[in-house]
Image 1 (cartoon, rainbow, N blue to C red):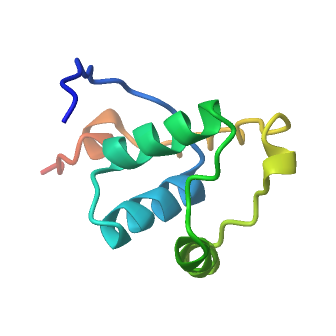
Image 2: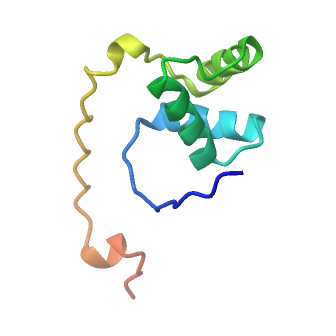
Image 3: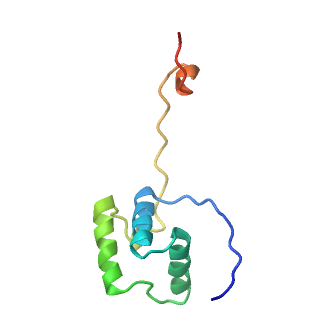
Length: 99
């Protein structure tokens, strides 16, 4: 075992991709962080991180969660516009009831 220093981070990631990664982490009995570390370390050395069996599982998870993005899409993603909040009284937005 190799002792490392880990830090908590907040990252933004495409929603369906995150669902697939979480499903894959559960399938491989890893934490999401451990899975991401493994993927990155393999990629940094130009190595494929997954076996054929795992790639087949990823394909199933992609279908389940509707992930249609591919590697070719990786530098072409933009955030969808946020929906404008509906005009509601401030108390209703905070879950309070009048009366």
